[in-house]
Length: 285
Image 1: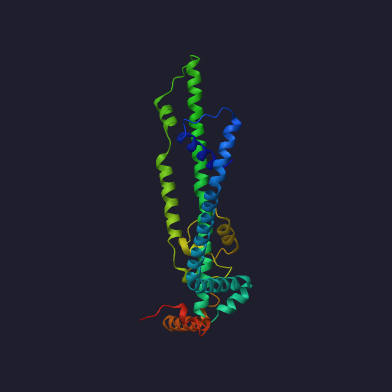
Image 2: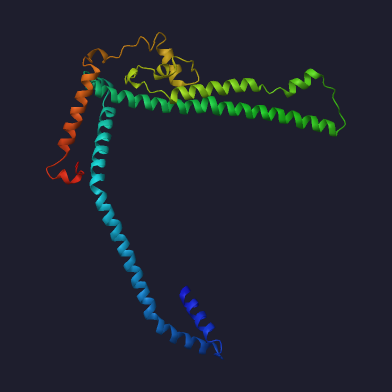
């Protein structure tokens, strides 16, 4: 039964409180008569509700079509960016280096992409090795202290009172808070140093390059597998003396590069527009 049926019937009964229905069949018969009279009202209400939904849908479609030109250009540039990023990643390293050779702008893209990826990797690994591991150590310390307290309480309940010297008590109370504070501060400084790093142009997209040393100035990191493995394989490697394999071929200076990059961007944008695309842009006047 529809909730409106009950509401309609209760409203009618409250208005005609003096009516007396001796049997349930008389009440049903009266209700059916009222319902037949109200069916047209309910049908009209449902029709108007459907029309309202249709109009709202048309309005949403209209708004979406108005925004489509802006989305089109945004989608084109996004897809172009994805294609630009995926192509070098799919290439072997030798081919990537050849593509970037002599082109500072193309060389800058994989450097930054590699550097950002390494930042994320290092921060995640530090969270496991230097934060989660510390939390586990603290939990173990807490369990030891709790176990000592429970043992002493048990001895006291059984009337066994062991005599502890002042040194024994201090040793039990010692938590080494200053030690944990130094560890926490050291980890926080390392995290900030990696997270704030932005000197991607100094790195390299070659596989024989250790970004950790560039980001942290060669800080110790035997708890990170990549760092430990790289240093074992390249014990004499130093990021300060490292020579990028394509750096010597980048003969165009930065100022000229910037102009070439702007011209290339303008040429690309012009090639993506057809003769009818002027309607997609706002009038500069």
